[in-house]
Length: 355
Image (cartoon, rainbow, N blue to C red; front, side, top):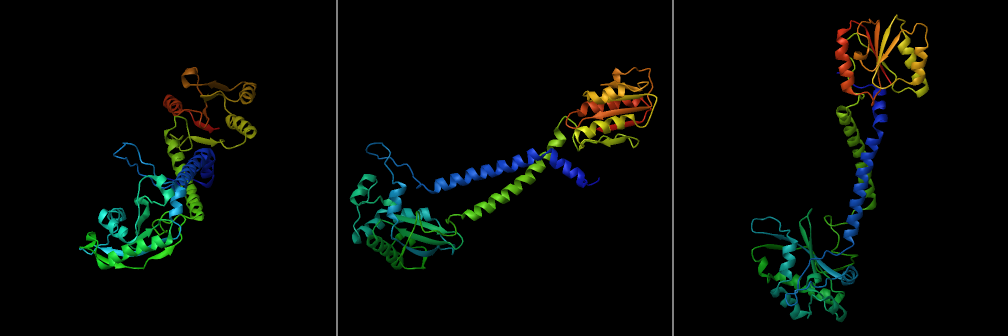
């Protein structure tokens, strides 16, 4: 098996450039759409449908603008939790549900009275939906947990965060009775754009990283396009670069497929004429260029028989040479193989000219 030459590689890339670049651009486009969707989604507050059991109607949820207002002068503290087996506890969704449970909520309300509601209109009077008041997230790299309190009032945030901090410090929350708590920071004010303070797990990806990833995806798309182009060569019914014309060591192959149109016609006529012979059979599935065939037919003695199939030639004639003109991406593999099978009946040199 021989490796492809530089010329063959260039020809392959030229023939399959649409597939290669089309695949790369399609991947980048899908990536861009995914990024756009992600950025759009990040700009929204995740909303979970809740139904009022009294009315059966969906409760109105907090908007992005209102959520941002809650995050002004938010207060946060960091801690680490281990279970009895010594493994880090990182289930922030469960912990958030615990902190919003009636027992913990009563402890908060006893120090800092809060009228929690699910009706968004009540926010105009200073009431906060409880599920937006406390936010818990985790950093999966360090297994740290972060509690962020946001009510839009710094003093209220500080008071609520302090209640939770002391409850963990003193072990008064039943959920943590069989767990070890390590407090990593005291309650402190943080400035957040939206959502909990960024960690390695939840931080936004920089535009530069998006561009680098996009460039990498484009390069990967080029290689995928090359792979698709390579497999496409094997499954096409027409003859391609990977088709093996030679069925005998005596076959002569003249490749003119990458010459210019004008030069190709002259080279084709020359390839058919040389060497001189008393009679030649010229086979082609598609008609030869008009100028080439007219030139050959006007030669003295007309030593050429043009046919689309061996079966079309007079079986009583003998030929000094058989020439098969094959058009890349035009001549079919079945036609070529069929002609070679029929030519096994002829003890005649065979020349294949690729155009």
